[in-house]
Image (tube, rainbow, N blue to C red; front, top):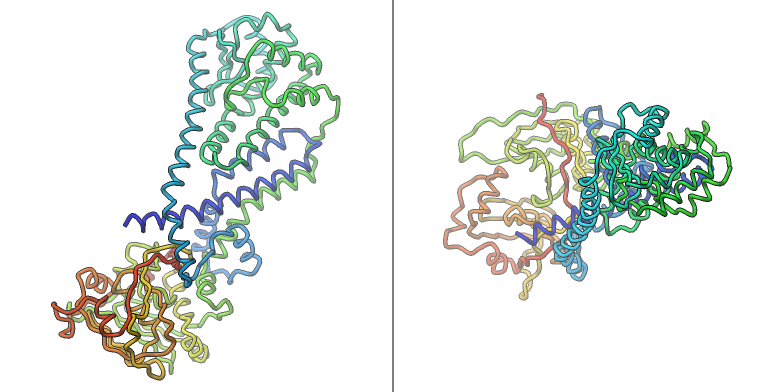
Length: 604
């Protein structure tokens, strides 16, 4: 159970994390390219680009894809996705389609099975790093918090008077509280909801009025820009993705552009460049820098570069129409592309294309009737399905949606994931008939065993939307026993009779036989016998309680036949003794069909 749990976690978390990091890296790269185009513009435009790249780490594109899928379910079916959308999905999720088919080479399967074993170790390493980063932030936060506990409110004086004047100019309505601290920390804004200015005691004596006003103006602009809030968001990114160097590099870019943006605003308010530069240097001589990015001070970033930037009397261009249009288009694409992928991959078109025939034309049904199954005596409670190749009719009695999906997509019970609660409990009677013009196409589809017509019916009547994922799950390899097979090869595919504890075949391919075994053992059974023909056999055994329960849930509740007496062999023993085959437990990477959406049919 533990191995299966970690296998599922590895498949879901590992693939999802790799895709998320890849997508976030693409966004950060795009932001970097845009900042180069805006290098002669004001710093605040570049700051918002880097901030968007940071916030992307907290918002997986999969959420936007699911939004697109939800919108698709509310609308009529869209056309099958084109190559453009297929390419977008492949580029944005390069790790999602690795090893979709069952691993056939033993060495590859062994390598895949070892991956889940390292999942607990990797999880422990990540957790240790996450806690270490949080502990570092908490220690630094306590340092500032302790300084605030010993600080006293400052309600008047030249500092408060200058601060109120600058607040009015900047358009800040709520006055900023000032605390006079004995600590040697630089002036800085503490807090997010209620920003407070920490002002070191004694620093005012080292600053003349122009210097004092320049420092206060810098802090006021930090409040107006809500820099502490956005810095705290990036600190969360750094804690969660501490192992990814890009997030720390982004943090440096954010601090650089944040301080440069405030510098530009202070100079734009009318402060003399030389006086402003001198005020920053005086603060550096008197105080220590802030230990936290979310406590915005005045001495952050590279001071040498800041001094050059402040003293350089150059004209900074505001964003013109072309650059505004460029940023608007980039933001729109970042949101619209994943939503569009969801729209075009959650529709019936996707359900058709994933099973192997992307050029399949949707069959047209002349009539479809789906009703809840009527209650019948327990001894008759078994599902039946029949396809008539002559007139294109499909009749099913007492079948669940899960059985229909298995038939349509040729997957075993253990290769289904997700879906509503009623997937394997609510039973239906179905009577559908193809339009005569489509019967010829049905012949070809049935010959190829692709189930395309049934997939269209499920997508149309049950609003079924699915996608395939590669997962490593506990499975069985069906192998030849040492004595060789005890099977009679026959020509063509004939009838296979199925009952609890008995499988009688007059001509069945081994892959279909493996699917029947999967229903009875509750795991995928992968055919590795190498047998390619159709075979006749009579296999009988004594089913265990869990096997009988699985058959009951699948609509095959019947009494155990006389061929399967209570003292008969187990299924594993019967395979070896009667057919010369054996089941070997193993972890296999298989294609799992994930049910994204399904609805109860509205009626005839």
